[in-house]
Image (cartoon, rainbow, N blue to C red; front, side, top):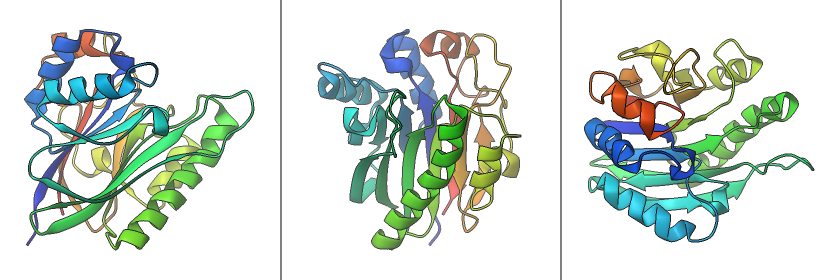
Length: 235
């Protein structure tokens, strides 16, 4: 039996902004899963991640500093069957990037979900687009959860070569069922889309976009330097 799942992708800028506004934004979206980028990753990061999850009404699944700031959170409907963190291939002098992944079940529907954050360096980012797909596919195959959801801050726009790579294997949820607004950056003056949710084509996207009908722009503007992307997907 198919289940409809609410998945939120959000770069929270290491909780350096208004945390109460951030919690209001997330709670307004009522997500089953939150894919966080730039979660706390220095001293006390585990405690900070647990406190953030609690403020959202969710639990920590996996991630944080051991995934270069990528973190997965989940609500009570979600059962975790496997989870993994990893670092992407590193280039000396550049920031270390990672992924947090989990195989999850909601009702009778199982899928793999991942959070990632690609490089600011053009050449490294192009390589990482292919690498995250390989890592995601390998995990999904091993856990026998072929439906895949990839969330993240991709530090690139939809006309980039990285997005061509990603959409060669996955569907851009915004393009499939746009609702709300498109641009995710900056939160105060949105003019570009750097953040996205990609899904395998065996899933049906019901809606995707910046949830301006659910969360207040005034809250999003002070919660982080990015706005979130909400994807509601039937799996």
